[in-house]
Image 1 (cartoon, rainbow, N blue to C red):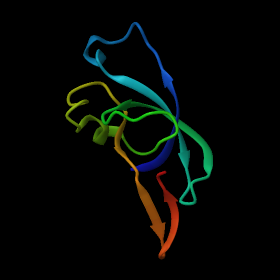
Image 2: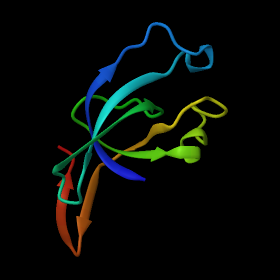
Image 3: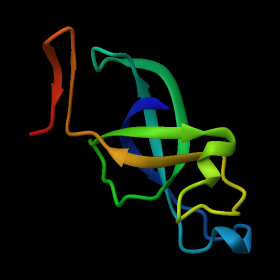
Image 4: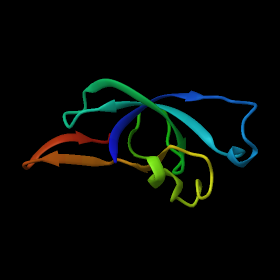
Length: 96
């Protein structure tokens, strides 16, 4: 899993029919301090997240193991919205 920040949406009006009904989000990868690393992913949204939220992304074959993405040609999925993380007892991120 990777930490990321949702920075936008991706609209595809024509796509593989098994992907119908999925919302796609543009996610920037972040480091443990919450700083963007420069990497990004387009991920199917399985949890109803929105722009600005910190999320967990599963990639590869794991991305096809959510209820929303089961047996779909998906390589990245947002599978959790992050509320908080800490490192060595120090809060690094807390959702407003």
